[in-house]
Image 1 (cartoon, rainbow, N blue to C red):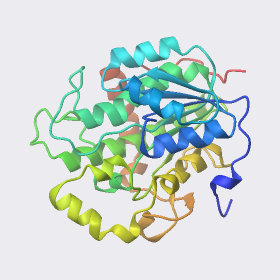
Image 2 (image 1 turned 90 degrees about the horizontal axis):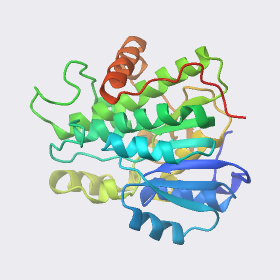
Image 3 (image 1 turned 90 degrees about the vertical axis):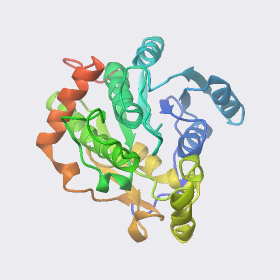
Length: 296
C-alpha cells in the first residue's frame, strides 16, 4: 500500500483482537476502529472502570478484561482467563518517563510495563494467536541502549528518559527475535512493530516543565491520536513482512501517512536481541512455547 487510511480498513468480522492499554490514546482508537469494523475486541486494561467506560462508547462486540502489565500475576491470570483464539495481539500499553518506580515483581516500571509485561503476555498467549503480534515502540528507541547487566537500574543512577529509550528499544529487539523464532518454528504468525510518531495522547499531555515546552515548540509535528493509531492499524492489517516496523512517513517520522520505516543500528543487533530474550525469559518465568503452531 502507498497510502493507508481508516476508510480503507476492511470488515473484520469473525476476528478477535486483544489491545492492551485501550482506555485512551492510540490504544483506544485502535480498539474503537477494529470493533466498528466488526472484530471482537478485548480491552486489556489496568483500570476496569475506565475500560468499561471506554467500551460503552464503542460500537460493536467489546469485552473488558483486567490486565496490569506491572504485575506478572495479573498477566498470568489474564492469559489463563482468555480461552478464545486471538487473531491479532496489540501490545500497546506503556508508561513514559515516570520517577523511579518498581513493579510488583521489582522491575523498573518502564521496562516492566513496556517490555517485560508484554513479553510475558505474548509468550503465554502465543499458542492461541493465529495471525499477528503488533508491539508499539517509539522513535525514542533511537536514544535507547540496552544494559543487559543492569536492565532494572539497580546499580546505575536512574535517568527516566534513558530508561524509556531502553524499554522502547527492547520492544524492537523483542519483535525481531520473536519473528525469528516464529519463522524457525514454521508458524504463519508474524511479529511486527509500529510507532505513532508525535501523537497527542495522555503520554504527551502529562509532560511537565522543559519537556512540556519542547512539546509545544514541536506542535507542527504533533498529530491526533486518530492519526497516531494509523501505524498500529497498518502493522496489524496491511500486507507487510514479519519483522516490519511501521511509522509516519512525514518529517522526522513525526506525522503523516503510515509506511515502513527504519530503525537504529542497536535495534538491528541480532546478538543483543537473543541475549535480551534469554534474560527476559529468566526474569518473567515465561518462554517461547515449544512447537507453537497457529490455532485453526
